Length: 124
Image (cartoon, rainbow, N blue to C red; front, side, top):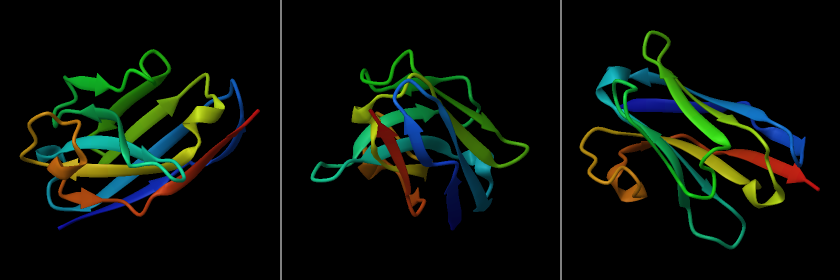
């Protein structure tokens, strides 16, 4: 079992920045690929970013590429999502997720453990 707890969400103006954190406990954190997903009201959960178990490989959704940066600190069992130049379309509940046997790394079905979710609201 892996328990994931997100923090760092909140309200920010368009053009601003937020840094999300996701702290993991339980099984070896460094065994897992980590991902961030988000879900806006009335929409399906969508992929945002993912990072490999060793931090050497990252992938981003086209909508956040160049604005968001995913990173991890395996010594602290934490994954981060730095979000810059936010816009109102980034408003959503953000989830972190952990998965071991992932293939595309962009599908939510490939992840085994999920955090409870955290609201990010970007005002215009």
